[in-house]
Image 1: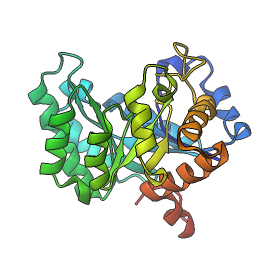
Image 2: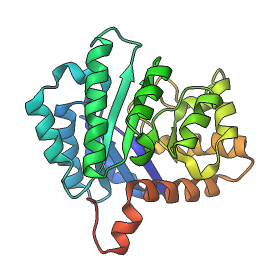
Image 3: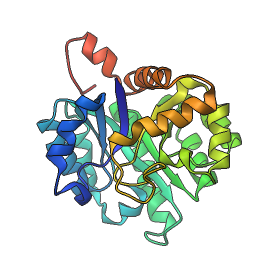
Image 4: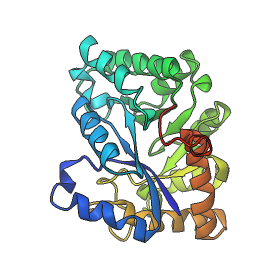
Length: 266
């Protein structure tokens, strides 16, 4: 079975066929999905999805590009959501300097606050970092994020930066970009990374892998991502499925919860 560790099925790109698509996942070998909050509104929609579908779990967080909407009232609501039974992470949070808004100081403020929230709740973090390698790493070290744990979503930096996060005990979300011909640095990083630190993700509806690049992404494309990882690591695709599934269960605490007879929640 395949574990989808990062998708946005609340996105409007799925409004016309969301239920049909989600109903098709099990028949295609996908048994678990983490739907990721990126704004307060998407967190609300994520809660609805995880209440409706037994195989969907949620992450609550505000993406750096949406942190301009945050205030103390919204942050308190986010804190309350982190106590819900099927919420398994704080995310996606971090820094994104590709866009000019909101300004870096605003992004940093709420990144730090959300890291603190993860520490308070005992949930792992899902980190978004784009064009902000040094600041992201500096803030995470200052926050002792090695004590929190989590995954670097859509990892896109060099293997040297990967080494820093490995030393902190983090996992790495590998998605469709790894199939792109020009993704040399990412391919090198995947070769370098140990398999027990890799998660499969799509970031649906974004970043569809080859041969569907440029189209709407979905978890149905996970075999293409797994196939590229398998080729880079010199293993078969089924091993990629099995190891990444176990990794995700371990990170998000789902195996422990299942053994305790519970589903979701810390």
